[in-house]
Image 1 (cartoon, chains in turn cyan, brown):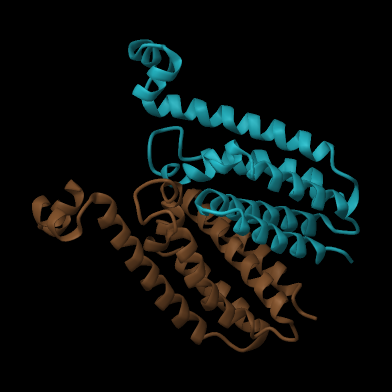
Image 2: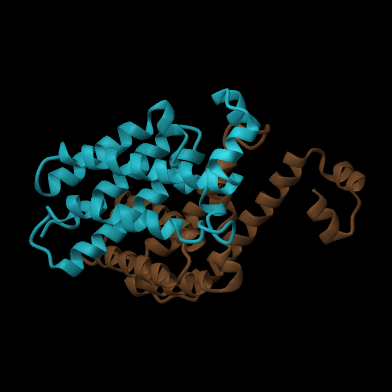
Length: 164
Length: 164
């Protein structure tokens, strides 16, 4: 809280008056992060080519983002996932909300790779979602960029198995 | 530190005398966790069938482990990965050490799936490692077991693409 006071110039009593508890303030931050990530990823996806090439484009953009200064900090959702269960009211379902918000975003990318049944598209969305969570852990915890690259190469290869 | 004092019955001064700083104590905990995980995963892998069936066996065991009470707590490495960079001396390389220790363990499983070149085996190890990190984030942050199952189904399908 004192970091926020220092960065915002807003006094503690005002913060508590506006946001309620510390947990509610954090929930507001997470919700905003989710909305921003959704907007950013949707924008990136809109710029990607059709078909499987578009998935590779998206992965390239994600890798470029991971190498920026803010990208190196990792994903707020992954970084705080430890605290997202069994704590304050309103938090228990945040990770489900996060996934349910992100799934359609990833789906709009993955469904470009045809032919595929709906069930296969859903499974690929789950795979991509899981890979990106794992990628973010590596980006956050690794000291060099080699591991970032190496992880992405493996993800590209897995996506290539979708070619029929 | 007071939690450790309470759980162990060892007084704070003794803890500091034995382990040095709080960070050094945490590093000791992480190293022990890594050694235990390595032993556990190696044991699980030893019980798996040859070939691609063995990879599916391993994934089943991992899912069963994730559904236990201790499994629900997630992976200490993933849970603390946020703090594993840029903090105390000796911590910067822990995540690299973690990965370098786990790679040969996963490799002993993945190399059973033949035919494959060394480069392909390495890539599959990186893929599996990344998927398991992502899986652990989901296990830790999800409220139900549906997501655990769903994520595993997607990982099984990705492994099936290794069949030549």
